[in-house]
Structure formats: C-alpha cells, structure tokens
Image (cartoon, rainbow, N blue to C red; front, side, top):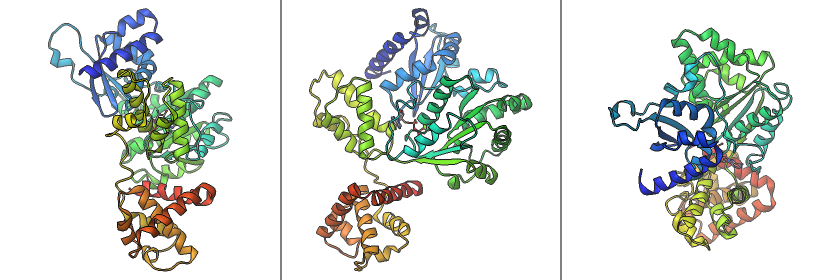
Length: 452
Ligand code: ADP
Ligand code: MG
C-alpha cells in the first residue's frame, strides 16, 4: 500500500468503526488492502474466522465505506494473511471469492448476495434517461409476477442497472417477507457448476424454485454458457408458471445477446423491457447535487455544473469525479474550490467525449435512422427531410468527435465552417424546445452506443 492508499484505508476503517459494535470492529481492524484488480478490491484479513464474519455480516458496511474512497470498486475478495511470518507465499495467493466463498460451503441453498444499502429507490435520481426503467422496476415491487413478468432491464455500464435491481430487492424486503434472491448470473453459473460437481443438482433446483422473486444481474455473462442457460431455462419456466416474479438486467438488448439460446431470449421478451441510456446534462447535475448533499461536500454550484457539463456516460465515473474533487480539496484543506481546481484535479479523468466515433460512422447511423443515405446528407439538397438529418449529423459529430469545423464541413460536401456552426447551434437550441427532436437525437446516441 502506498501512502495515499494507506490514508484512504484509514478513512475506510473510520467509517466501518462507526457502523460496527466495538467487539466486531476489533476483529476486523487489522484488515488491509491487499490488491486492487479493476473493480475488485482484495482485502487481507488475519484469519478465516474474520473473513467469514465479514462475508456473512459486514459486506454491505465494508463495500459502502470502500466505495466512498474508491468509487470504482464493485466487488470484494479476501485473502487470509496470518500475522505470523510463516510460509507466507502459500496461502496469500489470490483466489477469486466465488471459488471459495461461503456461498459454496452450502451449495444447495440459494442465497441472495448482500445488497448495497445505498441502492434504494429513494437514492435514485429519475431523469428522462431512466424514467421508464425506474417506473418498470417500481411497478413490479407490488403485485409480484402479475403485472410484468419478467422485467428485462438493459443499458450500458455504470448507468444504474444494479442500483435499480437492488432497489427492487430492498423495497420487497421491507414490505414483506417474501423470499427474494438477488444474484448475478455469474453467481448463478457458479452454483449450477458446483451443484453438478457435487451431485446436488436436484436439491439446487428444488431450492431455486422455491424463490418468490428471482433477480438476476448482468445476464450477458451467460453468453456461450450452454449448460447454465439450460438450467436457467427450466428455472425460468418453473417460476413463471407459479407466477413468481423474475427480473433480469443486461448490458445490451435481447436481440444483441448473441450466444444466448433463442428460447431464453424469447422468454426474456415476454414481459416488460425497459432501457436506461446515458443521462443528459440536467440529470447529471441532479445526481451530483444529490450526492454532494448526501455526503455534505458542499461544493460550489459552478463546480458541480462544470462536472455535470462533461459528457460522462457512466454514472460511476461521474460520481467518482465528484468524490475526487471533494476529497482532494479536503486533503489539501482548500476552502474555496474553484472550477480551475476541479479541472486540474480531473484532468486525466474527464471523458474524451466519445472519441471512438468517426464522422463516417455517425453519418451512417443518422442517415439510417432517418431512412436516407449518407450521400444524400452530403448533397446540396435543402428540403426539410434532408436538412434536419444533416443538421443532426453535424450536431452529433461536433459533440462526439474532436474534429474542427472546417474538417466537419468537408464531410458534408465541403460546406464552410459557418454553415457547420449554424447547424450545430440550431439543433442544440431546438432540442430544448422540441421534445421530439431531443428524443430522436437521444435515440441515435443510443444506437451509436450499441453498435460501438
Ligand atoms: P450498472 O449496474 O448499470 O453498471 P450501477 O447500478 O452499478 O450501474 O450504477 C453505478 C453507480 O451510479 C452507482 O453508484 C449508482 O448508485 C449510481 N447511479 C446510477 N444511476 C443513478 C441515478 N439515477 N441516481 C443516483 N445514482 C445513480
Ligand atoms: Mg451492474
């Protein structure tokens, strides 16, 4: 652990201390960061006992405190490193939790993964990008299995799918003692594999079919996993027939889940499908304001505004930027946080606005959306049915690439830069007053996302 990390870890322990009774805290306070591997933090603990204790009872507390310092962390794994220096290389090797976690000590039971206490409906900001998804998830918390079954929620990374699915589980937990299971499809797969290995498939089936509410996160993980899909298919049918509620999330729509059996896809499509797409400026700002207030950062409006104006299409990164600015300013004891400070602090973290798209790609998608051809957008035709798509394409290219105005002009039959800027401004201002146009532009952005 470097100095900065060890300071962050101290803060994490402080937060954990507030949540646990003193004797429990004593047991866990010797834990340390062992490694960070993308969104997984590996924590070293002093004994198997402590590991099990954390896994069984304190995961949400740990995860909550850790995410305040490391917002990108989504999973925790543990290694046991006994303080005495014996054979230390042997048992400190990192093995992913799912290969040894407590869930597998008892393969027959189907346990819900721990829920993040923050992921509730109350903490979810509703904007035009997620309003349908929110309403859909909310609606299946009452009248289980009757309104929409299954619920299929899809959207890109970091847009709130897990948050919404866990909010369903929180709400159902609160309102009754239905048997709710929230798992990832990876967890489902691991349980299937394990029950095959130890010959308890029947028991596993019996148990999972007793669940009243099955929530499976990140179904795309099952692409190509035939045996698990088979098991899921039967589970699905059994639950569905008993009118038990099923909710599923995916990072892409059903028809793009190549490698998932047709019959499963058709079942996923039997109920309600809702999607989430990247938040617009207003929603980004609302999310930041909410977080700023909840965490009592008290950053000035113009700083929040600056962060919101960056084109984050991943809310995890949006929140991460806010946390970074807040924690850096507090570490350096800066009272008046300025936009310049935020810019400097975030200089390597701001999104390089959709830099992966080329003008050609954008033109093709826009033309396709409006049932026309890229060549027609380049032409001199000025009728409205061509002018609007052309302006939309120009608007998106200006927003999503780093090309200069004259270069963009060249992609449209050599139009000069004043025409380009005019088109851009026109769409930008009309989107504010014309919801249909705004919708179209957002649809196209979604299409671009899913084809990239
Ligand atoms: P996904 O599962 O789609 O990758 P998550 O549900 O993990 O995304 O969300 C990433 C982060 O963004 C979480 O911290 C979540 O609380 C936050 N988040 C996403 N959408 C919203 C929202 N509408 N309001 C508040 N927080 C949100
Ligand atoms: Mg998720």
